[in-house]
Image (cartoon, rainbow, N blue to C red; front, side, top):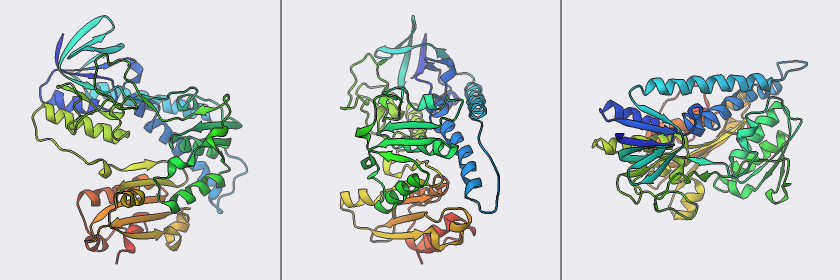
Length: 409
């Protein structure tokens, strides 16, 4: 069977499939597991972990409030797991409904020849191939297994070199587990030094026992290591880097013309929203529309720890110094504002960086709901606003977002 576009992997590249279908192209999505349509983001990553963090943060807020007195409160992990299961199934089903007219071919797919994908014993041809196979944890048990627990463990050991380990540590510490975290904090050196210090202090305040990764026992540990590319199904000799990511150009095209790689498997920006953006770019390129390219530094990043989280967009302090870019730093401490005490975010802080002409270069935040607040800064960065314009922007009061701009006058 022949298609205009064959997408290998059922992750967030399905957003590009919608655009391709709307332009009249014949599209197929090959996914190994019918229940895993939507990829890691939907089933083991963004969606379930943020659901767990959202519910766990409620327990923190109850405990942190001096005005609420409860003798006993806890969360039913089995019911939370069931809620996760229902939510992911509902979203997965909506993907199939959204992509009516796209062929879903379920089964293990391999790119065996240029433009030829074999799904089980059936070969299909694509004028264009989009590789969307993602990445997986290299060790087991891992975060996927933590999301399958039905009882809150009294004692939990988490180890790894991925900052995502901090998210899982926060989830179970807030749920009431005694957490031992085996982690190399040098992997957090991309953070502003002041933010890194407060983040580590917050983890200790949650009674998370942080120990060197080198001291991790070999057993009884859930491993949250940096994921590795899923390239076993790619039988062609495509160019790869030292970590086995598929190398692509600025159009996300591989070393083989007409073959693209989007999402985590190319290793450029391993974030769900970046995967979505890349798939849309490729879809527009295929349909000969005017494409767009987003520089990686303009893509926001969030580390969803709780009760406070970290977010950045643009250049960080570390990156500016490494690149030798002249900059001015504006800092804000939330302790000085009403929202700090109101929203249990006194330890929150933010840094904004500007060039010598006053244009925004980037920002780093450590606050409650940092992922929501960084959106304002992201829009400002894309809009190429300068300090003078931002200082005149009126935001609603009392909010955390407004405090970021109050020190610019």
